[in-house]
Image (cartoon, rainbow, N blue to C red; front, top):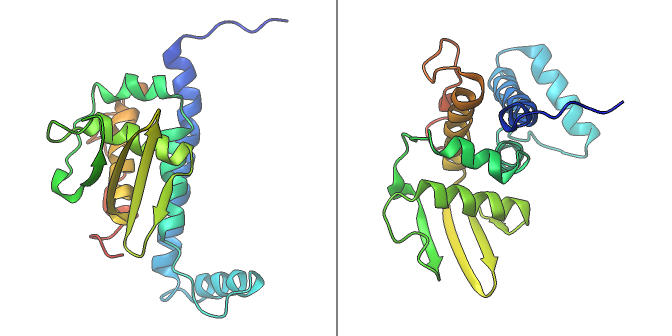
Amino acid sequence: MTEEPRDARTVARAKFQHARDALFFARLIAEIDRSRESRGEVGALVSAVERANGYNSPVPLVNQTLLLQMAYMTLVYPKEGDIGMIVGKWKPGLDWKRVNVIADTNGRFAKSEAWEQLLRTVRNSLAHSSIEVEDKRFVFTDSWKGESVKVAFGWDFLGELTIEFFLAANEALFDVPRDGGAQMKTGDIVDGGEA
Protein backbone atom coordinates (compact mmCIF):
# COMPACT_ATOMS: atom_id res chain seq x y z
CA MET A 1 0.00 0.00 0.00
CA THR A 2 1.47 3.36 -1.01
CA GLU A 3 1.12 6.48 1.04
CA GLU A 4 -0.75 9.44 -0.41
CA PRO A 5 1.55 12.36 -1.24
CA ARG A 6 1.11 15.26 1.15
CA ASP A 7 1.52 18.93 0.41
CA ALA A 8 4.45 20.87 1.94
CA ARG A 9 2.29 22.63 4.54
CA THR A 10 0.86 19.31 5.82
CA VAL A 11 4.36 17.82 6.13
CA ALA A 12 5.63 20.96 7.89
CA ARG A 13 2.71 20.87 10.31
CA ALA A 14 3.41 17.23 11.19
CA LYS A 15 7.08 17.92 11.92
CA PHE A 16 6.31 21.13 13.79
CA GLN A 17 4.12 19.21 16.23
CA HIS A 18 7.37 18.03 17.83
CA ALA A 19 8.40 21.67 18.35
CA ARG A 20 5.05 22.27 20.04
CA ASP A 21 5.80 19.33 22.34
CA ALA A 22 9.32 20.63 23.12
CA LEU A 23 7.92 24.02 24.07
CA PHE A 24 5.24 22.38 26.21
CA PHE A 25 7.95 20.48 28.10
CA ALA A 26 10.00 23.68 28.52
CA ARG A 27 6.96 25.43 30.01
CA LEU A 28 6.27 22.44 32.26
CA ILE A 29 9.87 22.38 33.50
CA ALA A 30 9.77 26.14 34.14
CA GLU A 31 6.58 25.71 36.16
CA ILE A 32 8.10 22.83 38.14
CA ASP A 33 11.15 25.00 38.82
CA ARG A 34 8.94 27.85 40.08
CA SER A 35 6.93 25.43 42.27
CA ARG A 36 9.77 23.48 43.85
CA GLU A 37 10.01 25.86 46.84
CA SER A 38 6.32 26.44 47.50
CA ARG A 39 5.04 22.91 46.91
CA GLY A 40 6.75 20.34 49.07
CA GLU A 41 5.88 17.32 46.94
CA VAL A 42 7.32 18.97 43.82
CA GLY A 43 10.52 19.93 45.64
CA ALA A 44 10.87 16.40 47.04
CA LEU A 45 10.40 14.86 43.59
CA VAL A 46 12.99 17.17 41.99
CA SER A 47 15.45 16.56 44.84
CA ALA A 48 15.05 12.78 44.47
CA VAL A 49 15.76 12.96 40.74
CA GLU A 50 18.75 15.24 41.34
CA ARG A 51 20.23 12.79 43.86
CA ALA A 52 19.56 9.81 41.56
CA ASN A 53 21.59 11.60 38.90
CA GLY A 54 24.53 12.33 41.18
CA TYR A 55 23.85 15.96 42.07
CA ASN A 56 24.55 17.10 45.63
CA SER A 57 22.89 20.49 45.30
CA PRO A 58 19.82 21.88 43.52
CA VAL A 59 20.04 22.13 39.74
CA PRO A 60 18.38 25.14 38.11
CA LEU A 61 15.90 23.50 35.76
CA VAL A 62 15.62 26.46 33.40
CA ASN A 63 19.14 26.56 32.06
CA GLN A 64 21.19 26.67 28.86
CA THR A 65 20.52 23.00 28.09
CA LEU A 66 16.75 23.42 28.20
CA LEU A 67 16.93 26.41 25.85
CA LEU A 68 19.25 24.63 23.39
CA GLN A 69 16.92 21.59 23.29
CA MET A 70 13.91 23.83 22.70
CA ALA A 71 15.73 25.78 19.97
CA TYR A 72 16.89 22.57 18.26
CA MET A 73 13.39 21.11 18.07
CA THR A 74 11.93 24.42 16.86
CA LEU A 75 14.62 25.60 14.43
CA VAL A 76 16.50 22.48 13.27
CA TYR A 77 14.15 19.52 13.37
CA PRO A 78 11.72 21.06 10.87
CA LYS A 79 13.36 21.16 7.44
CA GLU A 80 15.07 24.37 6.33
CA GLY A 81 12.44 24.80 3.61
CA ASP A 82 9.72 24.77 6.26
CA ILE A 83 11.48 27.58 8.06
CA GLY A 84 11.55 29.60 4.83
CA MET A 85 7.78 29.20 4.59
CA ILE A 86 7.43 30.70 8.08
CA VAL A 87 10.03 33.48 7.99
CA GLY A 88 8.05 35.46 5.41
CA LYS A 89 5.39 36.19 8.06
CA TRP A 90 7.83 36.62 10.93
CA LYS A 91 8.07 40.04 12.55
CA PRO A 92 9.86 39.47 15.87
CA GLY A 93 9.33 42.01 18.60
CA LEU A 94 12.90 41.63 19.84
CA ASP A 95 15.67 44.19 20.26
CA TRP A 96 18.35 43.67 17.58
CA LYS A 97 20.86 45.51 19.79
CA ARG A 98 21.02 42.38 21.97
CA VAL A 99 22.70 40.52 19.06
CA ASN A 100 26.49 40.78 18.86
CA VAL A 101 27.78 40.02 15.33
CA ILE A 102 31.38 38.94 15.99
CA ALA A 103 32.36 37.81 12.48
CA ASP A 104 30.67 38.14 9.10
CA THR A 105 33.06 37.30 6.25
CA ASN A 106 30.49 37.50 3.45
CA GLY A 107 28.29 40.39 4.62
CA ARG A 108 25.21 38.38 5.65
CA PHE A 109 24.53 40.92 8.38
CA ALA A 110 25.31 44.04 6.31
CA LYS A 111 21.78 45.34 6.78
CA SER A 112 20.51 46.02 10.25
CA GLU A 113 18.06 43.61 11.84
CA ALA A 114 18.79 40.67 9.52
CA TRP A 115 16.41 38.30 11.32
CA GLU A 116 16.28 35.68 8.56
CA GLN A 117 20.09 35.54 8.50
CA LEU A 118 20.19 35.28 12.28
CA LEU A 119 17.78 32.34 12.20
CA ARG A 120 19.83 30.64 9.48
CA THR A 121 23.05 31.14 11.48
CA VAL A 122 21.52 29.81 14.71
CA ARG A 123 19.86 26.90 12.89
CA ASN A 124 23.04 25.83 11.10
CA SER A 125 25.13 26.24 14.24
CA LEU A 126 22.72 24.06 16.22
CA ALA A 127 22.59 21.46 13.44
CA HIS A 128 26.40 21.19 13.32
CA SER A 129 27.03 21.59 17.08
CA SER A 130 29.06 24.75 16.46
CA ILE A 131 28.03 26.43 19.71
CA GLU A 132 30.10 27.78 22.55
CA VAL A 133 28.18 27.80 25.82
CA GLU A 134 29.44 30.54 28.09
CA ASP A 135 28.20 31.58 31.52
CA LYS A 136 25.57 34.06 30.35
CA ARG A 137 25.58 33.75 26.56
CA PHE A 138 25.82 31.47 23.55
CA VAL A 139 28.21 31.98 20.63
CA PHE A 140 26.89 30.49 17.37
CA THR A 141 29.23 29.86 14.42
CA ASP A 142 28.13 28.97 10.90
CA SER A 143 31.05 28.12 8.57
CA TRP A 144 31.07 27.01 4.96
CA LYS A 145 33.67 27.07 2.15
CA GLY A 146 36.15 29.19 4.09
CA GLU A 147 33.60 31.81 5.13
CA SER A 148 32.02 32.15 8.52
CA VAL A 149 29.49 34.02 10.56
CA LYS A 150 29.69 34.22 14.34
CA VAL A 151 27.01 35.78 16.54
CA ALA A 152 26.54 35.89 20.29
CA PHE A 153 23.68 36.73 22.62
CA GLY A 154 22.37 35.91 26.08
CA TRP A 155 20.73 32.58 26.71
CA ASP A 156 17.50 34.35 27.63
CA PHE A 157 17.49 35.89 24.13
CA LEU A 158 17.70 32.41 22.58
CA GLY A 159 14.57 31.47 24.52
CA GLU A 160 12.79 34.61 23.36
CA LEU A 161 13.95 34.16 19.73
CA THR A 162 12.76 30.55 19.72
CA ILE A 163 9.36 31.41 21.19
CA GLU A 164 8.89 34.33 18.79
CA PHE A 165 9.62 31.99 15.88
CA PHE A 166 7.30 29.36 17.37
CA LEU A 167 4.47 31.88 17.51
CA ALA A 168 5.06 32.82 13.87
CA ALA A 169 5.04 29.14 12.88
CA ASN A 170 1.83 28.54 14.83
CA GLU A 171 0.27 31.39 12.88
CA ALA A 172 1.64 30.30 9.48
CA LEU A 173 1.04 26.56 9.82
CA PHE A 174 -1.98 26.30 12.10
CA ASP A 175 -3.74 29.64 11.54
CA VAL A 176 -3.48 30.46 15.26
CA PRO A 177 -3.24 34.24 15.70
CA ARG A 178 -0.27 35.45 17.77
CA ASP A 179 -2.63 37.04 20.28
CA GLY A 180 -4.91 34.01 20.42
CA GLY A 181 -5.98 33.42 24.01
CA ALA A 182 -3.61 31.07 25.80
CA GLN A 183 -0.59 31.78 23.61
CA MET A 184 2.82 31.27 25.15
CA LYS A 185 4.58 34.38 26.34
CA THR A 186 8.37 34.57 26.51
CA GLY A 187 8.17 35.07 30.28
CA ASP A 188 6.63 31.59 30.63
CA ILE A 189 10.13 30.18 30.32
CA VAL A 190 12.70 32.93 30.72
CA ASP A 191 12.18 35.66 33.27
CA GLY A 192 13.51 39.04 32.22
CA GLY A 193 16.96 37.99 31.11
CA GLU A 194 18.26 36.59 34.37
CA ALA A 195 21.00 34.15 33.52
